[in-house]
Image 1: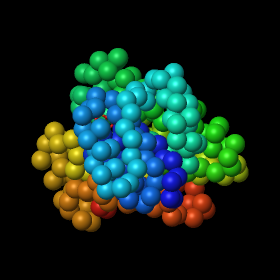
Image 2: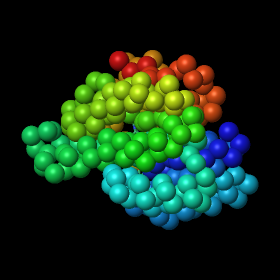
Image 3: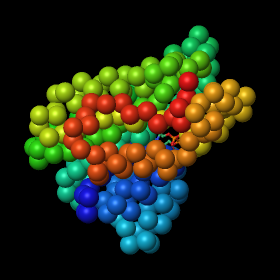
Length: 245
Ligand SMILES: NC(=O)c1ccc[n+]([C@@H]2O[C@H](COP(=O)([O-])OP(=O)(O)OC[C@H]3O[C@@H](n4cnc5c(N)ncnc54)[C@H](OP(=O)(O)O)[C@@H]3O)[C@@H](O)[C@H]2O)c1
């Protein structure tokens, strides 16, 4: 992956941050986006570059198609074509039951989570088809498999990402573009810090490993799919959840 250009959406914190660090260690030129945390994002990019690796942070609201198309055109001019794409940006929402959640908030979660994925795919996949190669990993969630209370929009958006990814994989696989999903369980990040301890222990006590996952564990699976995995692993949702029941 030496000098391969990889776009990671939402790289300023949490799982995305660890994905950026891991791919930069593997020799990729990592371009990552952020929405609100400019300071954190630029500090991470500088930290990675201080190690002699390549990472560059850019503001882009991935839920807005026009911005994503303009952003990706600018990046391609500066760094060359994308070799891989990791769609990681996402939000959990307000945690309220469906009937108590405002309709515009509900749709904003949908737009951010599934819209970010379709927007980058619209912007980047034609270029990957033209070069007859590309790897895409979309980050989903076990919430999209099981449907979690208080997460109706989040669960719906994540299962939409899985079926979208499988359909896209079947459309573009013959052109050398390999699409997969990674579906984490409960991972220690800002996103899960406000989830009650009772909920976390209730969910994890019967799991195989009885603990939350770490960001590096997800990043190492993503890095495998981007850098090492045979292309015959395609159109899959790979779950990494410590054996949740
Ligand atoms: N943590 C878990 O337990 C867990 C479990 C399953 C799946 N996931 C999924 O894994 C991914 C990362 O989660 P995380 O826990 O690392 O979340 P996090 O700590 O809350 O970080 C979210 C990242 O997404 C960025 N982001 C959000 N909306 C964006 C937008 N519209 N445009 C660009 N960037 C945007 C944020 O940027 P700013 O910092 O600039 O706001 C941040 O970098 C998400 O897709 C999440 O659904 C997480």
